[in-house]
Length: 524
Image (cartoon, rainbow, N blue to C red; front, side):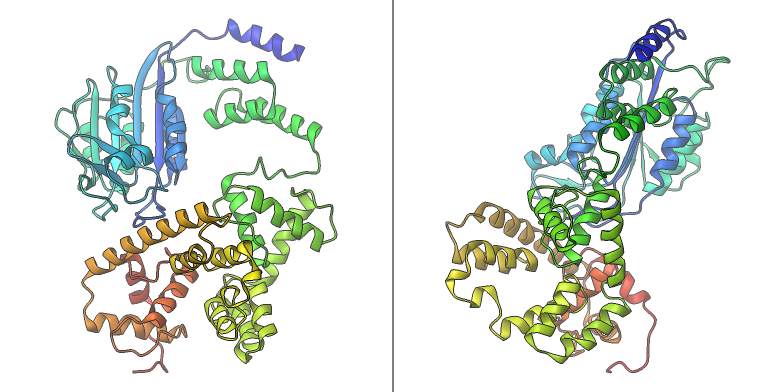
């Protein structure tokens, strides 16, 4: 600790303060309840503007709460305010006077809901005002679900002094950002991307990114020094991680990583704590547990009570201490076991189905579901079990509240949750079941509207069914009528091809199906 106090004292007399140029780059492309849109290489764009001397915060596919955390860089105290450059790519809603940049969890909502699930652009432009600033907004023409009183897209924006607002497709505004980072004017940035527009009140001659004065390129910024001082004073893993999130390329990043690594070795040299893993890694663990037939709860990238209980079950199954946390060797073993199963919908999935579930029989069907709970034939397996009487809702009432809810959660359909609610109106899982039921209904309505907007004629519908049939997904008769079998086949196709699983045809699903090569042997 004395070493850090000495270093802090040395930093107090370090380089003179300079103008603090700040940038935020966020790319949202994967929305849960809205059409996906083209993404851009957010990390590369952030690196470009950071190299130009900007303190930079970035993020990809962020829900609303994380949006606010990243944008907080604009609101922090600034001793010497400098230029501001912000690029936001994703979906927007507006009410004619205010526009909200929506988090990836956003659901169909009115103006109040938009405020809770998004960030108002009016606030962002206020935080950028009174300095050389450019706000780049990237989106496309697809619709973001909304209630009456809102419109999808970017609406009229009030002028904020010194802020130029540029709009266009995600790819076009990304190219414009690269031009700005190279020290070129807004007018030059507009010239490199077709369809890029400068909103009224903007200054086409503005040059927000200027070469740093000689001798200052390698000097730490005031904000960087301040964040380092805070981390050094606390000297905890969390404090060093916070510094590195804010300044991954900061002047003290290498020392911060070394100190964080040393603290981790002191605390738990053998544990890969699921509390410290990134959300994507936590989601990988949840999916792995589900693939192995355990019940980790909602696949939301957050290790909660249900996931920890599933981890304990997995540890007991593997004769390990049931701590609910993973050691490094255990994490490797979990990944190995999942890899051994093969991908859902892959050759091993199909072969195992042919050897087990396709032959029928309760045990064979259960074996298939234990190995491939999200497999290509999981729906068929559950349907056969239900018809044989092995369905929680067809068993005696003594099967219980929790058993029925676990079944509904595995089905994850509005109908399944409704059956739970009908059977246990005072059950211990009513609140969670009703919330999921309502969310699924809203998602289904949005998917229905999206499919209706495509205006699919009978010929196109028959082509879709033909492609599903060629993929051996059993869509029913190829007659242009979408039955329950067709919907289930669409769900399987969407799951295998990493599309939003709704059972309805989205623009992305249609494009993927039409791109499938024709094969011989399909039914006419």
